[in-house]
Amino acid sequence: MDKRAIGVFDSGVGGLTVLREIIEQMPFEDIIYFGDTARIPYGTKSSQTVIKYSQQNVRFLSQYDIKTIVVACNTASSIALKNLQESFDIPIIGVIDPGAKGAVQKTENNKIGVIGTTATVRSSAYQDRIREINPEISVIGTPCPLFVQIVEEGWEDSDVAELAAKKYLIELMDHEVDTLVLGCTHYPLLRYTLNKVLGNKVTLINPAYETAKALKEILTEKKMLRKSGETPVRRFFVSDAPEKFRRIGGNILNMEINNVDEVEIEKY
Ligand code: DGL
Image (cartoon, rainbow, N blue to C red):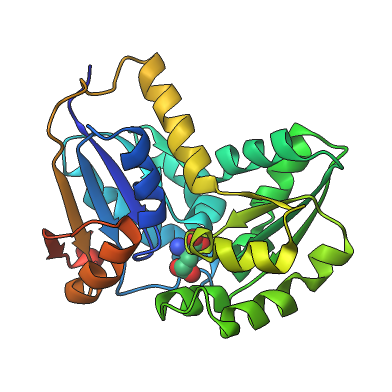
């Protein structure tokens, strides 16, 4: 058993959809979460900037006693994961590989759609990984940048969300994908609207769930999970506006977030 905490970072509050799955599947683990709320969004930034930010986030988390880091942000996972794994000694996992594997397992007609931020879709990380696992699969990627704002406004089940989804997803529907990767931290919160627009023939893949599952498998295999029954300590850090994080984050996690501290991330 390894009592050290799991470090998780994201560009903001969205990564709590990943943390929610980690808590669900590994409820006894200590967690240190960093949300880069001062510098969100990552999805519109250049690769160079996303790599620089991600490196700072890992440096910040590494000062704590942690056994592994989860890059909850799809944009950072797409662009910076390899660089992070090469630059730091600590095991680091991202959301792309688990999400891609989950989609490949589910598709029956070998047509998969991927939605995410502009940077994630442009990086082709999901598309490449899916084709690497099975070259017969055709993958189509569509950036849906407005979805992040819609979710942060709390409008995920509204007419606005439905209209945006119809406009964004038309090409994917024409392409007749039977599986759709929700390649952005915020998108699992749009599940209801996406199901409504796409109908029940399209299976939605939540990389957050797949990543928590993969992490649990790794920690179990390495005998690094904490004993059941232990009381977990969960600490939260943000680079700006802790109050807003507490409010929106509490809704995503479905629990009260009390201990949020502000960090000057540029120092790292
Ligand atoms: N967390 C980001 C992602 O999953 C979405 C928000 C952003 O653009 O930073 O890609």
